[in-house]
Image 1 (spheres, rainbow, N blue to C red):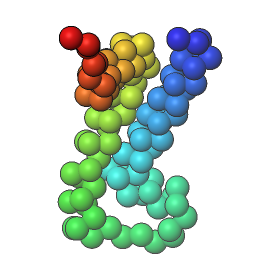
Image 2: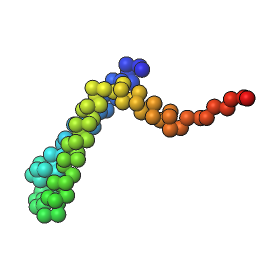
Image 3: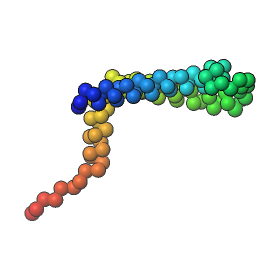
Image 4: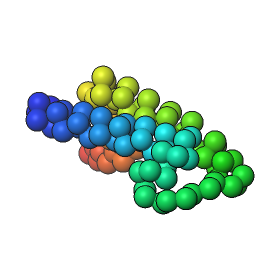
Length: 96
């Protein structure tokens, strides 16, 4: 595969991981959320804390997966292509 394509894929994975980590920190630290979004006096309720506590680990897990993908881009692309081709293969017509 072209090195330029690999570069852009890895860059997009890194950017996604950084954005996800910032979003996860905003969920865990309400003061950081307030400062980043300019909310002024945001006072999170119990419902926000519950949802943020459930969502933040998922966001950090997704960030970990994105960082893992930067190390094995070719393997993931190969596997995706293989399973896609197997799923949507066109049956061959053989003459008898």
